[in-house]
Image 1 (cartoon, one colour):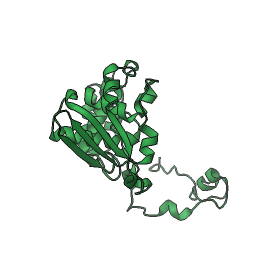
Image 2: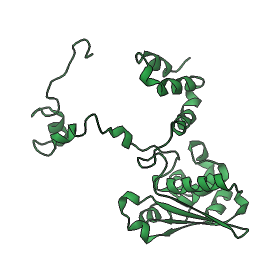
Image 3: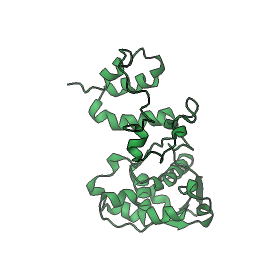
Image 4: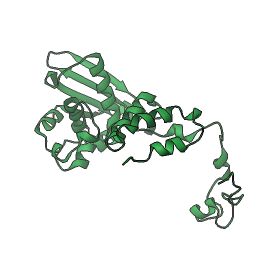
Length: 241
């Protein structure tokens, strides 16, 4: 549209009547115009967007990441676990650390012990792992009872920026234990995900409807800088009959 000289008003942000700032603040002064262009071309807000790799509340993600790391360096079976202790902030304890009760999918996705049990039994905590019949799964409930979330005042004292920090202890039946600490979840601004992680999540979500187009979409997006125009991507994003 811009190429065809179709443009909007030049003062779209600051116009006193109908401008973006005045309209959405419903005022002439409750906004900061300088903030609109602060860091323009230097700071990119999209890099501050967090990605979720688990289909559950964000407070649970650091614990799940820590357990994945432990399992990578020391593979273990569910039967090997004696207990799991999650040291967390007061926010995480209040938000997700309560004793699990089978009261619906939302409760299952909010509850940290249940999500830990889901990860260990199912191998993942994504959309497919949360079906209506999982809510009262006896195996998950039994394992969730081995998970205890305790308040760590030192983590709470770090403030809101570290509210998701967690230190996880897995105690095994043979008397050994493993510990892992995560300050921020994978996919957050502080611990952003790799391109492989992002593409893997996209494939999980897109393949059921996009099928074989999914790989082509991933390849095109990863090579977006070399794309002559957006037509090829638009065509790929259309469902094929």
